[in-house]
Length: 260
Image (cartoon, rainbow, N blue to C red; front, side, top):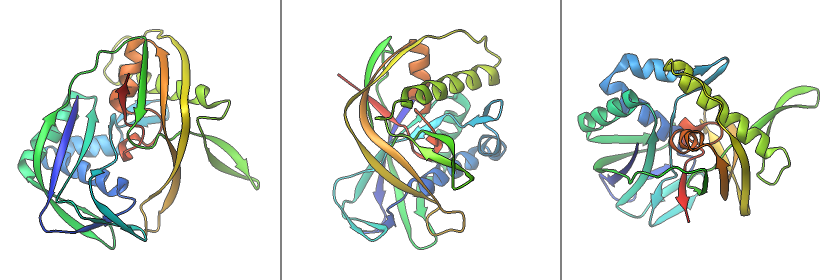
């Protein structure tokens, strides 16, 4: 299910990190924790497992702010309101998130330098999507895919552009791993689901995101914003749409919307 969350600033022109993805992900875990701390810990530490792969099965869009100003690595919010979409696969995650929101009513987005408080103004269920064997999507947050490689004699992570020849291979592999993890965690039968094609539409835009900005564990990841067409089993497409396509989805990566 998808929810549109509208937030209102509790005071004007507050400042949030420009790289707000990790802080916002922390907020989501805290909301779930306020409803069910054991479940939140399980989701954070373990989640849905397929071998060594762990998935949280939620994602969220970039923040939608009408008016803002960027200064350095900070975003000054000129608009009183902003919103984002959160997409959640598992019913228990969704239930605890909704209960937690109504318990809290207010949230704080912060890092080591900035802190901003918001009132949860509205929570709206977004329209359901009719999943088909061929669909077009547009990313509403950066989509991240990577592969292990060697750089200067050390293991390294190479972030992939949709323009690269092996992008389709890694896109397909990630999607199939998500499906397996979901089926295995819920003890559902695993079926052979077809994946025919991934087709890039137009030119992708690169976006570099700092995770845990300003902290000792800061890392930078590269994602891409683009449109694409997917030909695959509707069940496989639904997993990607609902959980996010690619990696780091619980940090707000790989969220998409359907386009004509």
